[in-house]
Structures are given as structure tokens and as C-alpha cells.
Amino acid sequence: MKRLLIIIIFGQLICFGPGATEDLSISKYQDSGALKDGAIIFQTSQSGQSKAIQLATKSKYCHCGILFKKGTDFYVFEASQTVKFTPFDKWVASGVGGKYVVKRLKDAGVVLTPQVIQKMKSVNDQLKGKTYDRTFEWSDDKIYCSELVWKIYKRGADIEVGKLQKLREFDLSSEAVRTIMKERYGNKIPYDEIVVSPASIFDSNLLVTVQTDH
Image (cartoon, rainbow, N blue to C red; front, top):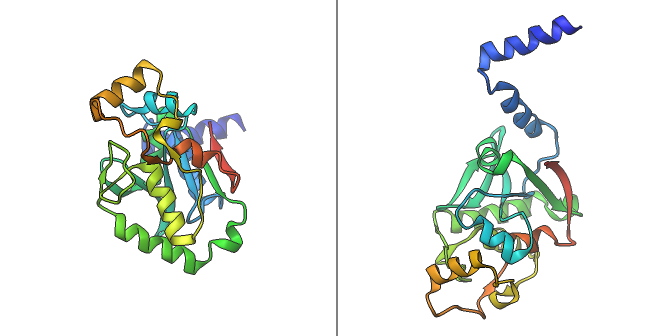
């Protein structure tokens, strides 16, 4: 048995290279049945603003997107540099330690019908290609990650996942947060701007965790 295991691992290394076991581990989730159209995926990003968002929202999850299947593979529809589809494996690998959490609506099987999913995809088409919103404004001119998720669910399924808040409701006291705000707003901080955070969506009581790799 031990010899067989060694042969299998050695064969993987020959066929796929040193990272094969990790890649196969990621890919297995695409075939597990846990991933579905409309599921929301969360991670700790490695972006420069990640720490500030974590401190302001009191959550380690600072980036999110929505899963959609294209062909035989899953993609994450996200707002990063632009609003785009990112292959599932690539998206997972971009987060800290490759860790993530997937959540779905508790009644997704009833609510997310093929018709609703198609309507959500129509919203995707309207927002795809938009530039990432570094100032977290609520208009559609530019879009940030959790705003994208919230608006797709609201416009496509008439569901509000996550509580809308005003910027002033977050913890803006840390040096990291103040530095980011000074850089982006100067002395005109829009404290009454409507904002939805990844943490607010993550904590929504409408969602249930269906898969985690942390």
C-alpha cells in the first residue's frame, strides 16, 4: 500500500510538476457538488488596502465574488482592477494562503431558479468591464467587490445580502485606515456615503457556509 502511494505521488509530479498535489486539491472542489451558480466566495486578499478593510470592518474577509459555471469550470465574477470573470483556481490562489469560504442562500435550491440565475447573469453583463472603485461610491460608474455582489443579488434575485451602512459606521480610528482615507479623499471624507462591506455580506443570516478551506 505504501509503495502504491509513492508511485501515485511520483506519477503526479512527473505529469504535472511540483505543484500538482495542490492544484488537484483545489480542482477537486469543482467536482464536489458544493459549488453552485450564485454561491458567494470570500477570501483575505493580498491587496494594499486589505489590512485597512479588515481593521475597519473587524473581519479577516476583505474580498468576495460570485461563482458562476461556464462550460465545465467555475469562475468567480469579481471586482478587482475591473469587473471580470476569474477562473476559480486562479482566484483561490490569489488570496492569502489560498484560503477561502463559500456561502449560499439557505433556500438557494428554491430561490435561485434557472430563471433567476439567468437574470443575475444579465446584471453581470451590465456591470462587466467597469473599473474598480477605490473610493467606494454607491453609483454604477465604478464598482467594488462587495457592492458588485450586493447589486447582482438585489437586481437579479430581489434579495439584499448584507446590511447597507454609512462610511461613518465603520471603525475609522486606526492609522492604516486613516492613511487610506487621506490618500483617497483628502480632507473631504464622505462619511454619509452608502457602503456594503464583505464582512456584512459574510455575516448575513440569509447565508449558510457550504465549503471552507481555512
